[in-house]
Image 1: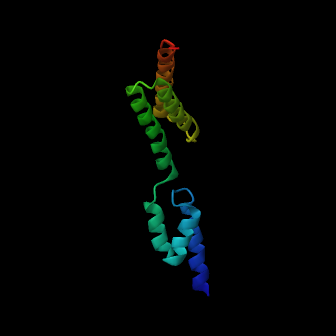
Image 2 (image 1 turned 90 degrees about the vertical axis):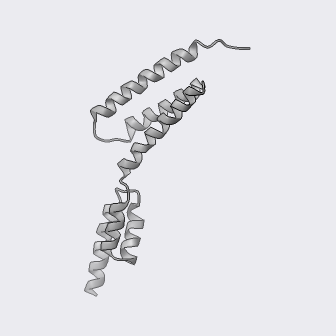
Length: 124
């Protein structure tokens, strides 16, 4: 009986570690109970952290914005750059000089694109 209590206790600990990763608490707990807490911990440690996932989120929007700008779709490019800015400004808890510089750079790009979009003649 003590082994079962220890098994569940360590499985819950692995679940708590998995809470800050993509796998999440529930799946980490499930793998830890089914296989073993040690195997569950290995699976959890191989799962990417939430901050790694969020990092890719803003990069995806920057690539979409570059593609839209290349195709001449200025409004869509502005929209994607603003999505990237949103994720850069809201998904991170700690301040970072590199991220702050990127935010300023993207805001500058958005301002230039807005100016460029205003210069387009309106065709009726």
